[in-house]
Length: 100
Length: 474
Image (cartoon, rainbow over all chains, first blue to last red):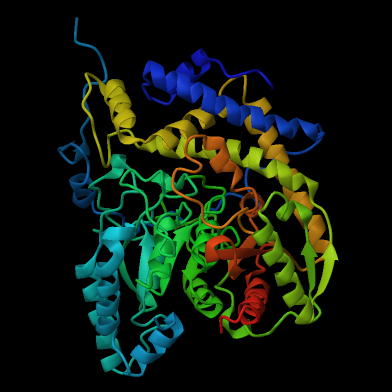
């Protein structure tokens, strides 16, 4: 796990996270994130082979409830705060290319 | 300034009014908000309506609540209907939530008067408020220094006597650290004690809302109001709010206090000295001191700085320019998403999103995120073992008193390292309190941290009260 973080790794995760970085930002973030990951190598000092992972402090279980209709947020009030809305829905730019 | 308990009593009994207390708060805010940059938004109109409702209830002879007429500051990552909520991020600038966080409803029901939204590190990611997209908050005790973070604005509001109470959120120390740096009582409650509904999520398995106050009794009073099961948060504990205030003066006779070297090592001499004196005070009050070691504690920082960013990278995916806040146009949805997020998030948020995305990505998941979750298990087990031998632990909250602006911003890792003592309680889900105890360098306050198992708030408040009295604060 000591693989040093490479510039192309940062470029890849930025793409996955929908962020665009300048060349200077790529250099800076690669160095800074690499330091954090390097520090994380101290976890290797523990023998964790047979340890169970904990994703949540109190071992959550699913909470179920009756499927009852209850008041929810007002649609118009929610849409009024959206960047763009149309016909009672959120509006976004096109998601596919032009028709051939 | 009067305590919250005193104000609520005065308002209930007609010696003061909510409107009068609000006017006092507005005057104090007017005097120093420009200099200190505590509030991102002051909601005088909404606060005035809330104050009038309290005064009307008192006039009708009703019990107006445990916090009747008490002005309170709200960290700006909690939703309040119709009031701008930004998380100190450009990506949410101008957004007004269509609903109240559960804590807001509980405060209003208890007669509290929310006066405005306080500054924070963007999305609560930071330890100094220097990561706010709208500029940092200054420490009221020394404006050349940071107030701590991420709930720095909430801490500063109380420290500057603008409001007697504030609420913040604590994901890795974001209540306790600013409380320590501003000379306040700050509480990170047991995970699930306070509903997170309406708290804009940073790291959902670690986040917890809690109080800031000048006194232990005020903090306990506020936590009683905030706590309790909420059907809107399925992680909230299925039990009523605990009885805290009634036991604040019960003392610590016969209690076993653990002192752990890992909770003070690396701290400045003045901080270590304060912890030693706090132990002496607890011993004088009838507690026995047990020395023990939790070596796993040192690894908490590494686990935290993988787990919290991993959860953040997922939680912050919702800020995509579709439903709320900023949108920067692009030729298609993906381009719009990317342009919006690139323009809307600051550097620290981008760092954490990328770190988390990396730790969760194919090929690195087991080595980083998976490994961190196992360390979390080890941490939980190690603390559970310690709590078989002692009732609670005492350590430092922060390695130093309030630091200067710019001191830790050039290297993010340096800033992260300052969270080492507070992170463990978030990983384990346990309770912890920072209580002011003595002064250090430049006569700045020092915070001593009390850590206990889950649901140990009542005992921690008792111990905090012992220290408050020993420190000559009341």
